[in-house]
Amino acid sequence: METVKANRSSAGLKRGRPVGPAKKRINARFPESLAERIEYAAALRGVAVASFIQEAVAVRADQVIEAEARWRLTREQAAAVTALIARPPKVNGKMRQAAKLASRHVVIRD
Image: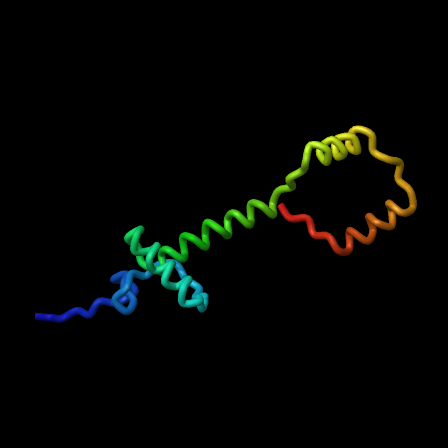
């Protein structure tokens, strides 16, 4: 009888764990009281501490990204912007200078 060794990658295992997408490790240290709260909260949810932290951090990261991607204006600010769009001021030297400076320092992202 011939014995065949399974290649770990073809068997979908690496060191006994499933092979998945590449992961990056981020180490963080927490004050003891916070670590205990995290462990308690994870236990209440019935998940591993690492999974609990990943989910919480992902939610917060999405909130920050969303908040930074949008402008929130008061009614007065929105009215002022609308008025400027409807009746833009005439371009003068200082505006040209500001536009040139901005083009060197401002990056517009989608």
